Length: 474
Image (tube, rainbow, N blue to C red; front, side):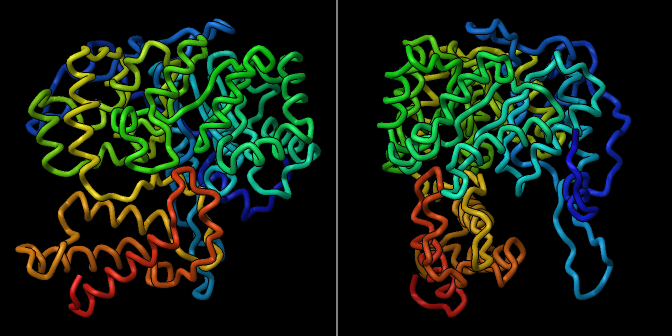
């Protein structure tokens, strides 16, 4: 069912790898985490029959609590032309995607979440290839994808229908198990009406649900709470089968402190729970920030359970909510997948004391650090002026967590932090893609789910970098 593509486009999908690859499962029987290495990490075999599942009350689907988010897929550099004047291109490493998907399926993961907007538009193709290559029957897994009609030139009924039909083609399937209106809330009610209501697209999607081409219909929420409340108030009309929300132990009470437009997870989850609508969770790690916390927060977590990974606390927290159907994780590397499998095979539900400890003391420690609320979703990309916006923010946040953003020249660690920030900046972000090339056009701002004033942050980081380079007061 794959449509015709050029060889170069096919490389972007396959990563110059074989479509089918033999994959040896790393699992086995026995309890998760039976062995601990000297660093306190689990090394034992991961059971293949211990995944925790939740039942969808609408369809009866038995969904794995761990869902595979196909947003941050592994990549590789490919130089098709092998010419000095043609730079190598970063493409999806399809062989590695195939391997990850097969291992996930072997260990009970059965929910795979993608979108036409992910991975520069190639996530759906890559997901379809990997699922087909796994050898698993289509009935053994659930595919979630989205109507990602963000651009005004995609707001017509015809363009929306075309996007849905393309998703079926790329994913090599005749139906979508979980279809979402993507990113409702960004742009408020006017945006919602233009994308889905006024053009008749939502009515058509509901018809496709009746025909079985969509088995569950829902939406993912970002931003304006008016939109969230409106869609839930019309539950009798739309019969949402599920809703995807951002939820983690930091955002449960502190979302507004991180970003004035965000809504606390307690409210979002509570509104779904009282209506009996299953919640699918995105950003349980806040774009990885809850796996890369400051050193003193690592010590804080390890003191309570030394053998557990930092990330496992966030995944256990999200999974412990009884109204949660599935927790998504964008697992780029095998170690990410293995760690999450150990967390959910089976899930050890948090005690109430641990929940309060995470939402209170632990969240307060993290919120006190002045990181930028970037979740590395890459919705702001590509920048028309070539900036690598997510990489700039990721480097800055990493340096904040490591204490490499000195407050002044008088700081005790100034020289060490200065060097670490500048050297790491040049290594992480090519110079032509750094913050000083931002012209403040603002095209990125409307696409940011976290409502970051990206041009303002770029200017601030650029001033900070220049001050470090020239030894000026910070």
